[in-house]
Length: 271
Image 1 (cartoon, rainbow, N blue to C red):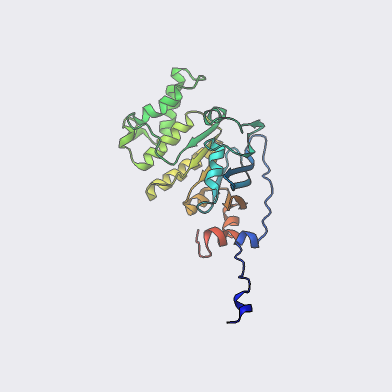
Image 2 (image 1 turned 45 degrees about the horizontal axis):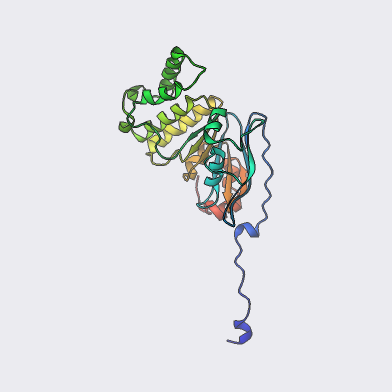
């Protein structure tokens, strides 16, 4: 082989994102929406989230999806208040929550259901929900009892209401945790991996619960590795890759997006 050939520059490896210019418009949201504007997070010299913007309207189910290491979980945690943002803003309506701690965001109306089990294992299902209702200053004891019975009925928990948290199934636990989150009377609920660790029947139950939240006018933001189930329940989805939103739209629009197929779903993905 000649020296000129051996010294020739190697072809540059270009990621699909660099090959394809991506222009994502800022979310257009109402004055009652949960809106995230230009969120950014840096660890050391590396920006893991770069100017990510998305929104959730009351009564809307929105998915935040992407490959492992894409920045979606960090973005999600910045909304919750678990991770501090380096740039950007989180707004609930016209209220800036960017500097609010997690518990202050909860008081403002943002509920959060973590991936890990959060049920109080040594309390009954009934006691789990009542524990949150008792923190509400707008309800007297009679109103607390009335709301408790309604939540138990709404989430089909009557048969386990006197069972300890440690003894219920995965699906029952999830329903109890969501009912408990609703006991705080949130405007929005953020669901972190709601389909993780539950059987197929329970997945169906959780999807029904999410529809029930929508009917109540509660906005729902979901991040989950179960792409198929998440897209099946979402009205709108945002796809994150390499720290940025690369596409958003209805589930059908996202599924048919060539860039999303190339960097995330694969060409053979079937919904």
